[in-house]
Image (cartoon, rainbow, N blue to C red; front, side, top):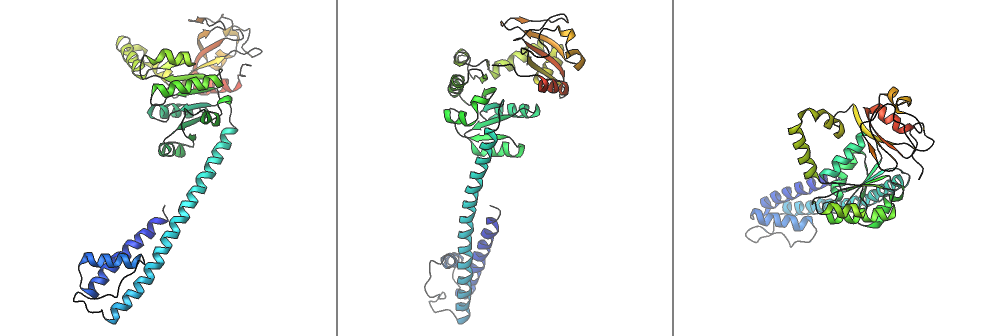
Length: 336
């Protein structure tokens, strides 16, 4: 597009020069002179130029017409050619970018899929990016995707997330989690249902604008359903009642850049299986276990150093971000 702008500027200059030139040699009105400039520049054609009294212009005027017509025809032809080449190059560039993006997606596994790139979708993507997690964004607004994802280097797909083929292109079968944060509850419900049918091991989190959609989204396969208004109201009320819990809430929300709250599985044969918390490497790493979710779904909180971990359990820990990320990288994924 930057190549086209100078040419457009040149055309505007030629129209200005032509208007002034025709004004001097024909003494016609500015509007008539602009019209003569346009029909001449676009090679539409013009009758023999005459002055305001109807007499043919002098030889100097004819020479101006010849030179102006040649310059105009060349410039206009170059403009049309440049626009055509720019359109073709844009199409080729877009096709190559889509192909490269799809190849990147095809080689990605264990990633997150974010359906919807609105305000909440953007915040999710930024948090995942800060945590150095692989993710793919799907949205139907191409301009929004390019504006947000290209500067950040995020992987994205342009299309309708409610289309089963779009989820397949995003590597649904290889993904570990999906966030359904589209603009309507109906769209989120369809995405959750489709994703759960194709990959029932997927950790699905959905946004619900209406409380009535919570039950439907959970029945469709969402593990967690978040109502932003309800969640925000509850947090405000908690801070009003217990102002001292603000720091803990900031840790949970990731507002402390050096601290992170994370959940780890305890896989069979892993370094945590069969060990008490105090005997594991967690204390040495500076990781504090604040809750255990047993394999049977039972939740244990508070947690003591003598509590033993078993295969199938999950632990909720808090610690320095680097320590959490390192332990996450070293922890083998549970076998499916």
